[in-house]
Amino acid sequence: MSCKPVYFFIVFLLLLLYCDYRDPLSIPTKVDEKIILFDAWNAVFLSNDAADILEGEIHDDLLKLKISYKGGCKDHVFGLFAKKGFMESYPVQMNLFLSHDAKEDMCKARIQSELCFDLSPLKKLYKTTYQTTGTILLRIHEPHDSEHFKLLVVYEF
Image (tube, rainbow, N blue to C red; front, side, top):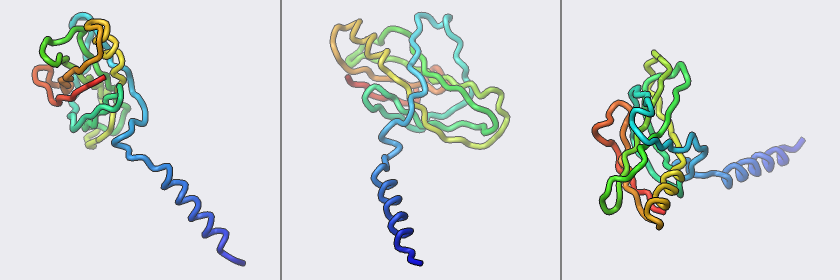
């Protein structure tokens, strides 16, 4: 009995897997949610369980955030919110607020994950307001700190 067919199959399978490899940091795999725009602060309650933003980047209209938080026993819910309207500067700026609902998860494991949010509602708001394409400086706040932004990301379209 020859093992050649098994070796060829394994090599073929490895080549197939290698050719389909994509760098997980450069290509968003799934979109968690669209950014939620609201008119007034009293219109929305943001969950503010602790989470740390480690890094962020934009690909097309998708904002990918690498985050860290404590938990491990329950599914956590994240959202990204912004008040309609831009801070007038050049380029304009906007505060984005990451919300985090830990669902009362008392586990202490340090979890790292990636979130991906669709920013196309921001692009639409910008184009409606200024009648052109442009650039927005996104000031991203962690859930437990609405006073100081953690990350500044440039969104160009």
